[in-house]
Structures are given as structure tokens and as C-alpha cells.
Image (cartoon, rainbow, N blue to C red):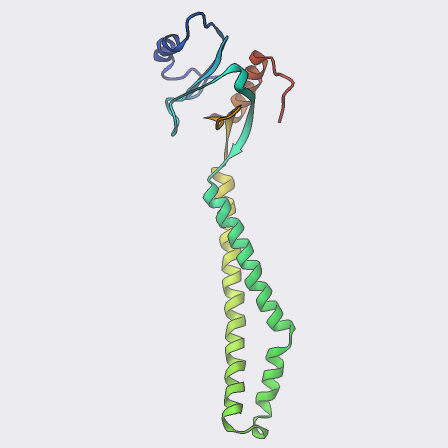
Length: 200
């Protein structure tokens, strides 16, 4: 694990944050973050993170430390929506095609001479409209599936891992780190807390 760029400043800050009689039992230096397990709490310094730069939890409230994948939720949600909408549109096109409606309207149009004036024109127009509708459903459904593939690819490309320190009664502490050092940091935190057997 590489030393945090602000590790020297963090030493003073860490000492200033300690309660009277509080001792540091484990220090974990990560790339862009620093974790300390003390006799009272778990402290997290994240000077390069996008959220809080400092967070903490009392030891009895720390439930677990684990590594979880993270990515841009917007990409994932739009991927799911695109797949669902694409399935609906392609399903509609399949129903129109399999129902034989276009073939029936086409045969009606062929025997148009037996149908009175405006009714024949209306049936002919309906055949054209349903044909255009089916083509549009197929086209838009295909575009949505392509979009889902592109968005899903973006989600997996931008996905990374983060160290998650779960705490009772509050949101977890999220520390963005690389995969290998994240696993080691989670193991060391669990070990310092006496919860090495807790896994997710």
C-alpha cells in the first residue's frame, strides 16, 4: 500500500482527534485515504474523496468492513429501462406480425373492388399505418437494445471497488480504494475489531 500524500498532516490531525486515553491500535494507509482503528473508534480520513473528508464510528457500532463494487447508478438504471422498453416495443411488433393483422388487411385491400368507397380507403390506410407502426416498433426497440448495450458497457467500464465500513444506525463509511488494498484493509479492520470471521 502506498502512503497517503497527506499522511504527515494526517498524523497531527489524528492525534488531535483522539480522546483522552484513546490509543491507536491499527493504522492503514491507502492510496488517497487513511484508516485508523483506535481503542474507542474507527476513523477514516479521505482527503481525496468526493464526499466527507473525515468520518468515524464508535467501535461497538461498527458492524463489518467489506469490499463492494461501485459504479455510476445512472448508467445501470438507464440500461435496465432501455432493456424493458425495448422488450415492450419488440414484443408489440411481434404481436402485430404474429396476429396476421397486416396480412388480413392486405387481402381486404386486394379485394377492394367489392368494398364500398370510403370503407375501402379506410382499410387501406389502416394497413399502411399498422405497417409503419410495426417498422417503428422494430426500429425503436433495436435502438433501445443498442443503447442498453452501450450504457451497460459504460457501467462496467466505470465500475470500481470501495471499502465499506458498516455502522449501526447510520449510513456506512465509503472509502474509494483499489481492489487489492481494499481487501487487505477490510481484513485488517475486521481483525483489529475482533470480527475476522464476519464476511460478506
